[in-house]
Image (cartoon, rainbow, N blue to C red; front, side, top):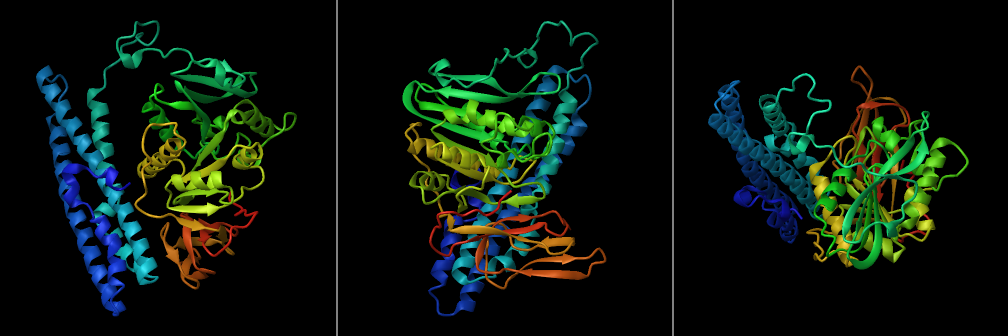
Length: 511
């Protein structure tokens, strides 16, 4: 999967992923453990320095070009000069986007390499080396985001077309960007058979009404393939600020060929419209819809909304992929929660190619649990962080979703094998803060800790350590808290445990 993101012209500047990932296993055959660790450390840091040199050279070059282009632009430039200027700025923005991808890909590669080193050479390798990597320019994503944002701002500022008074009302459309999109119908039920075969349709499905008596709707995209096959549903943003599933759905549908699609793909890009509009996790009253399922037809507002989401949309699915992210103040690895005792959902989980799979039979009131109770195999995919688009996680999760569709023979594509085995956890749980203060959580996502390792500290506002937290057992870091402001009862770290038999009922209490 990492190889898919390599820019061919820059191939020699990336980390030598395969070599470095295999290096710990080869070196571990040496009886001298210390010399093995030293050899790996030297090789790894040398590769990181290579990446950093390329990054810095490209970054400085881009910043210089941007400064020149800013000075070159002037209002009323002759048209030929303006077109050349636009072409140069477009090329620069492309260069900066490639640079951002280059940095993110190498960050992910270095983390995976250190995970392997931890597993083979012993705990502590990642904890020792990652701080050194994080000092390098390429590992600070803010560095490349700033000139990229600035370049886009220059483009918007310098290419904006002035709008004269009155042109926004009753004006003839002058460009494709100004044309009004055809109205999208609002329905009260998803009748899949009513949509045309071989086409992608868009509708709103009304699930409730607001105080004005207007429908509270969710957007639904329906791709009916020209060939027979299953009905797969994808939901996103059931928690209104968990957004990474939205661009995943957009990209998936953009590349769909309904003439070769077997079956029907239904997507709900925003399943919690009120929460989405408020940029919050819960429904408009703060209720967690993922603890309300399957809802009730005659109850509170969020319960009715949940009931109609199930009855009007979800019950028509034959499979469900529910896309989430971490909650506010936390970050997640790319991981899947699924009932691994069910061979259907276990297969879906592995095809998703996540970093971690957690065996979880779904908490009460969850959408996944409600779907399973209807006989619909369902998994939850956690894709990175809230209130933002994590480009790398979205790309990797999309590969996993297309793997699932390919395995069901809905798509003609071959499955994309992972270049690593996911960590399979028989259970997981959260560690909570006993006291309030300023929280620091040390382990990186998807790395291993051993029982007794220091995982977090809480200091008071004067800088004195009040509490230290240690790993209660060996495990892998599934997610963690990153907001330094910590109150009693805040979550600290989500620990995955790979220690035995899959239990019939497992609930990590995930919220």
